[in-house]
Image (cartoon, rainbow, N blue to C red; front, side, top):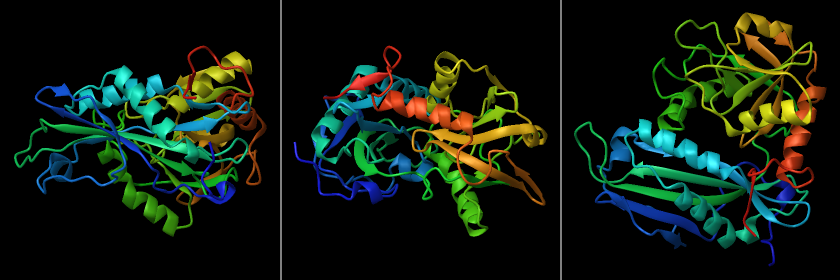
Amino acid sequence: MEKKNIDWGNIGFGYIKTDERYVSTYKDGKWDEGGLTQDSMITMSECACVLQYAQTIFEGLKAYTTEDGRIVTFRPDLNAERLNQSAKRMEMPELPTEKFLESIREVVSANAAYVPPYGTGATLYLRPFMFGINPVIGVKPATEFQYRVFATPVGPYFKGGIKPLTIRVTDFDRAAPNGTGHIKAGLNYAMSLHAIVDAHNQGYDENMYLDARTRTKVEETGGANFIFVTKDGKIVTPKSDSILPSITRRSLMYVAEKYLGLETETREVYLDELKDMAECGLCGTAAVISPVGKIVNHDDEICFPSGMDEMGPVTKKLYDTLTGIQMGRIEAPEGWIFEIK
């Protein structure tokens, strides 16, 4: 199979239209068979529930070319599980796990020419999403839904690659207590758009959101979880009912403990203890781990000992081990790698 003529080493994290996508419709209480289509356009009523009341959820995962030439995805069963957790909270129908996995397999197989070659640093990003499509004018859930998956080749999420980021502690809130911060709903990300534009205008790479109730505890950024390394080498991630359960974060914690022999802890992390941390990173599907060199809280600056030039040593070990597993250089735990072809 001949790959597309793309400059794989220089693509950014943006949308590049590929050949095929998957579509399935939920109507009269059941999903149809679903299948691939070359049509990337969606036609719906002006009164569709997704347009009026933002009834939409999504997932994100990647397909990789491994060192031995296979095309694989990473733990997609957990994406299926999280999609259904989101669907339940948003009054949407659950999608059978088998259907989710088959949709991923079909889309990646059909767009195999867009899966970047091994060693380029690029991947094929997959975006499964579901939305209410029938007209709804009163405030209530839709009764008809569409589930789709498209693929796009991408480079690094942050333009600087693995160069340490500067993060701002924002005065905006990402999620309310007892709200929807723990699911992957589009409305959560809409809440962060103004804050991220404002952060970029002020010269920052991202925002650090604090808990909305007390504004003393670290939660996450607009699109990634935090991971910290203490000065005695322990891996710590924040615990909160408003944090999205990142698959990458959970995988990194497993890698830290089982592969690297490090102590791990998931607990409430207070803003005033960050000055005592040795390393900080942002973790998620898009970025894997992006190192953080500095956090700015109004007039206070927290500069991590790992510095602004490169990843800290522990963060680098975590990054190298997890990407090694994803790319087939390191043996994966059972069930982590879903082979496409």
